Image (cartoon, rainbow, N blue to C red; front, side, top):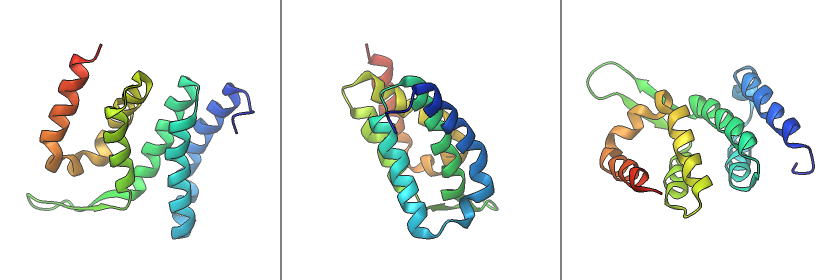
Length: 138
């Protein structure tokens, strides 16, 4: 709710991130899908940087439940990605001309490194381009 003060929105995100492990598995699939869509929408529309950064932590926590290595044994673990939209969001945000969107993409990558690391192996060339573009960003 953008009518609430930014500090309230930020602390709400902080508390929500801490509570997700306690209730997320209890959501039905439709509620999970709606929640994930609302999180990505919030990242796109939230005007306050501090709130966006706190929301990134919520997204990363949800990603812990939605993107998993299902078989860590052997050289090729199996990946279960029930939230491909978040990876697409990162790519799209990085291509956005707005500096805030590109910054958000890197905050998401940083927060989600351990969660999505195995998913990114196949996209290393794309990530190299993403980081190279960021290094040239002014």
